[in-house]
Image 1: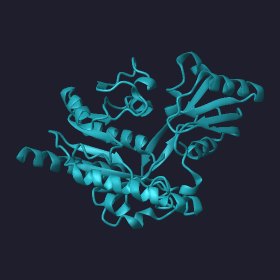
Image 2: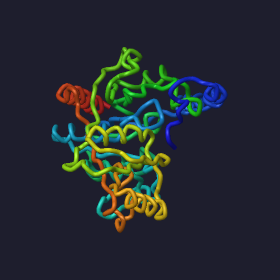
Image 3: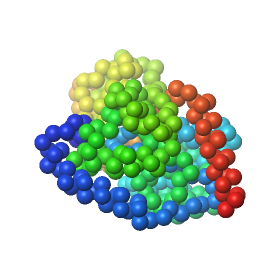
Image 4: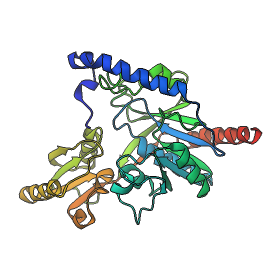
Length: 327
């Protein structure tokens, strides 16, 4: 779903939904308390968040994987494969589609292998058997199945923690203070407009920017569409590149497009003499026979202090390896 507007600040609808949110938050806390995470033989890094919606976890996870590869490591992602029908597999980007494994695993497989299974422990075991020497959990911070040696909380600086209420009254997946106790570091994406850093006194903080890869030609008018948590960020990136947007179309998060929906977009673009742009997450869900009508804006993360982040991860990894050797 698209992030509801009332998640930004408290209001009547948010207050009416608050009892449901408190129940949801309580269930999450109970689930985390009752299950003891299982340790595996290699370090596990979790890239998660405390809020629902698009905070930037996927590009952050890919960016961390790149830093690990520079250290000579062989990282594997583990993912539940939301929206995909296949489980218990290593993603093959030449063979699998988003319908098979989900959109995010398909995107992450460009950077490093991805083991898909709703059971994170089984996903980890398959990745280790395939040669992984370090695991990166894309999401899963609230999943108690697997022990995390290092957990990053990703925070969208533009959004912060919203109205600081639990789902569905707000964006929080769990209580902020409870979540902070299980994390060791935070990644703040973009400008920290809500001073979220002040709420994280005990965490090591890193900063990054989501950077679009600017196309060579930005003269044509654009119809943009996206099925992500906060599509406004994507539209802002297009404008930052220099495009003129004549129309934007929002779809629910993780939306799988029907051919009539895509044909309607193609028709409208032809009528307005515009070109179509979408995100990489959405592009992988477009049938290959129609992809020539669509353009994708690729993005990456630019770290403010990449070396400092890499050194921090290296130190934590070495500590985790030493601890596991003693067990």
